[in-house]
Amino acid sequence: MKEAQIIKAYEAAKERYAELGIDTDKALQQLQNISLSLHCWQTDDVTGFENPDGQLSGGIQATGNYPGKARNIDEVRQDIEKVKTLIPGNHRLSLHAIYGDFGGQKVDRDQIEVKHFQSWIDWAKANNMKLDFNSTSFSHPKSGDLSLSNPDKGIRDFWIEHTIRSRKIAEAMGEQLGSKACHNLWIHDGSKDLTVNRYYYRSLLKDSLDQIFAVKCPNVKDGVESKVFGVGLESFTVGSHEFYMGYAVQNGLMATLDMGHFHPTEETYDKISSMLLFTPEVLLHVSRPVRWDSDHVVILNDSVALLAQEIVWADALNRVNIGLDYFDASINRIGAYVIGSRATQKAFLQALLSPIKKLRENEAAGKYFQRLALLEEAKSLPWSAVYDYFCLKNGTPVAEEYISVIEQYEKDVTSKR
Image 1 (tube, rainbow, N blue to C red):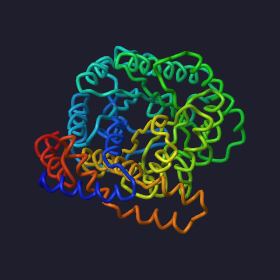
Image 2: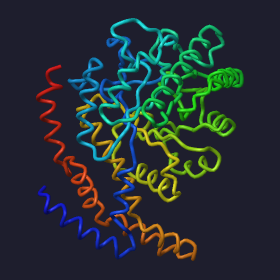
Image 3: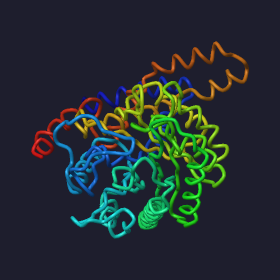
Image 4: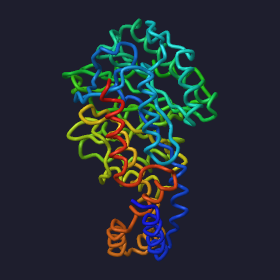
């Protein structure tokens, strides 16, 4: 698409939005300041560097075997650097603990240290990125069905130590990079069939969390993530939404809301305004569940659009941390990154360009027909021309132009792995 054509379309869109009292330049500046936290595990199907040939376990799985996945730390970084050139704006990177720079050495999870992630911190500085972190309780001989809620104190202590060390790594990331790192705690703990000791397991989890968060990390934003169920653990999840919501509120932590971790008809967006009244911030995992927590690539669907609207309309952009979380191994992994990231940005741009002032006036006046009509008309406003201009300003491919770039990268790089 020619530059002059993009600019002309943007100017026309700008005039149309101005008729509704919307400043597109202001919206673009706000979008520029929204940093997504890209998930490193899309590059290699959540394999990590502990055991590249290992299988996923602990209530999750990646499906597909598209060729070209990253096999080592250099290839993961190479792919992320490519992705950065295809997504407008400045973004973060979220690492799992299994992605340390272990140098080929066996380092068990209760032994990980900042030194195993220092090269990531240095890489992030060189690439103008900030980092977030996640402890990793799955795919390990001591994972089993229970980790932090395990009645075996030895196993429980192992995972407590791992999580404390993970938070200390996040602390170093936040301190060295000058931006607090989000540390997310998700465990798969649960049971495949009927469970009678629910209170007991949850009391053990609470005790483990109390020990973990007794260690203060001022450069970390702590999030605790719930889930409805894990694969093979369908009947009982220790860390349910109610459990973590209560724990987050009681302890001033973030509740992590993953779009795939609720019942299929349960929308995540409706939780935002409630959680923000009782917790300082919220951490999001933007995903796309299809029938279950299947981690499909994010697209611009109603769920994502509603999520962005709720955040923008609540004036909560500075209190919501936006991370992506999906791992599709059935298509080009770089393409999956770019589709999901751009879809998320588009949702936020649509929300920023919505005629919220007039919508609020209609609602306050009881003009519900007018409110619904304006919501519908806003869907067909020329927001795509504004996003194209955003891509142009950031020096990234416009519209579908990124497809050929990714195809060339596949030809030159990933197909040779």
